[in-house]
Image 1 (tube, rainbow, N blue to C red):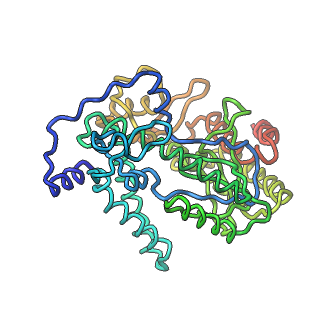
Image 2 (cartoon, one colour):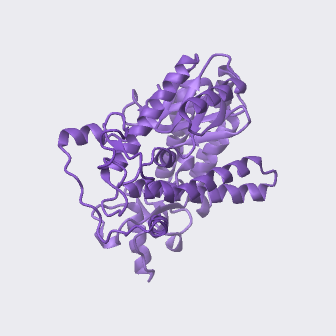
Image 3 (cartoon, one colour):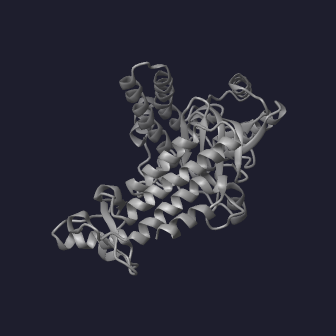
Length: 417
């Protein structure tokens, strides 16, 4: 991203600063008011029906591009009085100069929107995959552009510019919520650049029409992600009365599943746990009513029983049980007895070079005092039955507890043990 910015500056004949600009003084009161990130509306943890999901396309980069957000365009001398004002903060944006940052992100932003469109329209699965991956690569370039905007060593960024984008994003979501409610819909959940909305008896055409209204009013591109038959927003494990912002799963009317923040999405989840959870979700996706959802959940209990037996009777393979985690530091720098650090030390004793950032593969072993053993040192049957049963039970409760409660899951575990 810095290379793109330097290229634009070179084309414009602008001298690239040798050192970053000095940060302006900001009082604690103003910083507390300004540095608030994106807007989040918590969803009540329960089952919702006929919910539509809408997402802004590349919201933060799009705001940077549309509103001309760059380090040199915020609170400039020429437009301090008549510049475009940032909501909440009162900063002004230059009207006379197109900033280096919006110029630099124009090409990747335009290309990403084109690749997203090609991905949706492509009939060839291979091309769909290619276009999707290119869009994802450009997404991370654009994400970097926003983060780099607030980096203290960025040559064309500033803290005020970064805070301005966040303020505009909050204002955009608030305006969207107002339009949604004026159109007779109700907001179930909001997360920075996404909204989950519902209206009784609404169909896809109603949601698409609403998206068109929002796009016309705000002049920002929005995608309609689909309509859920049902969606479950999960509660916090620490406080059961509080929700978790990005932890949910649901089945859409187009026969696809969507899930975030659960064990099946985590990289450090063993394959056996991930497979069980995905099979449960597949069963639940066939349900169209609350009664059917509960019936499918009871069928999932039988599936859970089979996986518990597999762990207890030693039917799981090594690959099913392997956990993968990355080292964040050198093994000698770990103070606590973390399992992946223990496994890494054992690998070092075999002559392997373990560096920060490397992925460590291990199995949980031991009885009362658990340990971690890399596959190279593992002997069949050494895995900790108790720990893997805990993982299975926890992941089963994630899916089934909101539907039929968690007592039946716990009782199955106790009976088999």
